[in-house]
Amino acid sequence: MSFQDAVNAASIFPTTPITTPSGTYPLNVVMVAIAGAESSYQNDAKGDYGLGGPTCDGSTSWGLWQIHNSHSQYLTQMTGSSNPCDWENWCFNPNNNAKAALAIINGFPDPLTAIQNSWYTTWSKGAYIQYLGKAQQAMNNTTVYQTWQSSTPVVLPSPPPVNVTKIEEYGIIAIILIIGIVVVKDVVNILR
Image (cartoon, rainbow, N blue to C red; front, side):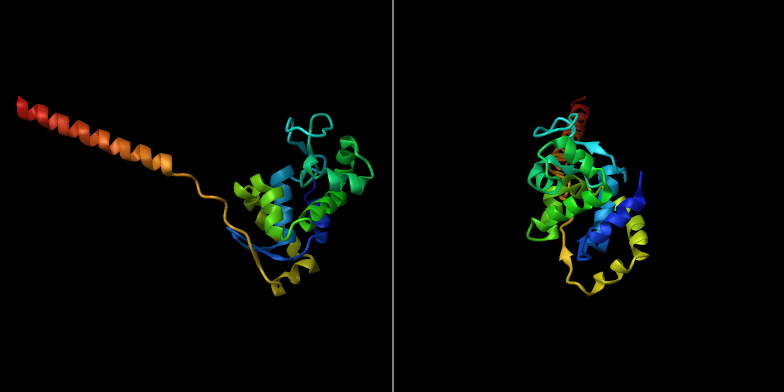
């Protein structure tokens, strides 16, 4: 595991403010937190087995930010190879993995869209949130962090709400059943 590798590599990310459900943080801090959720800060993390597309030993995403094979155009361009095992080895280098993540971010109109699409599960489930404090503290020790406050914030929506429709529906049914039982008991008592 290498938290420090993630912090060092994240220095290439812009410091655009990102509003999360836990507050506003520079993009580089959010990306360090995402690396924690995606890979537990393991440079050689592999994931997304069996999801299809080009694989190396069955894995389809690699490194700190779990760069997925769906970004093969970037990986092929950056590595000079179309072999997913070459992509995997290249992505195990934290600086390379950060370069690929930045290329993905730059391929979208804004960081909001990039995070929502490329790190959807980590974002939507809030898995990165537990890493924000540690990431912010580490980035506070760099001069890069100090410049974020002068930028215009990019507001990212909160993770989607839990669908409580079924829970409410079952609750109403339970209340109706309880009322029905009480009424039946009262009728039985009256008839006695």
